[in-house]
Structures are given as structure tokens and as C-alpha cells.
Length: 113
Length: 112
Image 1 (cartoon, helix red, strand yellow):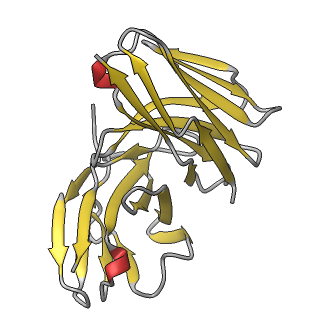
Image 2 (spheres, each protein chain N blue to C red):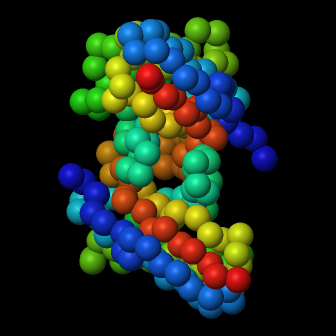
């Protein structure tokens, strides 16, 4: 079964450093997402991306965050200057079209120290 | 908040028994999806049920949806130790954007 892949699986970074999390969505999918889950809490929506632009973003997705689809296969989340509270599992997800199953990757654990 | 709660928050049962988890939500939805998450791992999709459907089955899983009560249930029959995980419902209510809003999850423990 096709899957969403994410790298790295774990990353530890110093506060203030930039982090890029990478995702390869399922190849024929059109909508892409980033979600995050702080340890022990709900999975929260960050941003959705369609047709090469952000279609919606949450309050969490402030100016420190950005997304890119640089080459037609990768989908990246950049955190410009990480804070301690950015420590979380970050999930990439994709969907083929409206109303279909949303598939998630295995996640990238980010620990900010 | 557009999403309600799942109950119970935690459930422990003996292997072989059935497990039922419930999910409530607050707005009209396009569809509702159930996911499983093993500790520290990714979200595995289980079942999608559309707003015009009332019941769906997949193997040992049975999902019901009652849009009049804005609730759904996930039944796992003949549970196995490997079913130990957290189970989340997620609603797609934002028509046209396909964004999911997750519940708080039920932590299911199957006792061998």
C-alpha cells in the first residue's frame, strides 16, 4: 500500500535553531497537511496545502512556520527559530481528493532543548 | 471547539472481549475517520464513514455513525493484545478543505 514517508524520524535541536521536516506524500495525492501532537495531547491541525499554496492555517502556524513543495514530490515544514514549546510529533498527511481517506506518515519527533 | 470528546478516555479489557469506543462532535460533518496510534508512532487509518452512511465494517472493526446525535462508535470484536493502542476519531467538517479535527482519544489496553 502506498504510504506517506517522513524524515527525520527524530531530531533534537537547540532552541533558536532552524529545523526542516521533510515529507514525501503519496504520489497521486493533491492535498497536503502538517499536523502536530504535543506529548499526551490531541493531534492538532497546522496547515493545509493545495495547488502550490496554503489553503488554510491554524493559529499555531505563525510566522515562524513555513511550508514548501520545492520539487513536486517533497513537502517540507520549516520552523525558523525553534522554541521549547515546539517540541512535539509532527505528522505529514495527504489525500487524493475531497472526501477521501487522509493518510498520515509515521511522524517526526522534534525535541527542542 | 468543533470537536467533542471520546469516551471512555481509557479502557482495559481481557483478550477476546469486545471493545467499544465512542466519539461525539459538534458540527455537521462531511465524514468521520477513525485512526489508531501505537505509543509514539504514526496514525494508522482504520475506517472512513461518510455522513450519509450509518454503519461500516472492516474485518473485526465496526463503526456506526448517528448524525442526529452527532456521535460515532468504534467496536473491535474479539480483541487481541496487538489491538492495544490509542484510538482517535477525526471529523472532516470543513467542506472543501478536507481538514480533520481530532478527538482526545481512547487509550485501549488489552490484557492477555
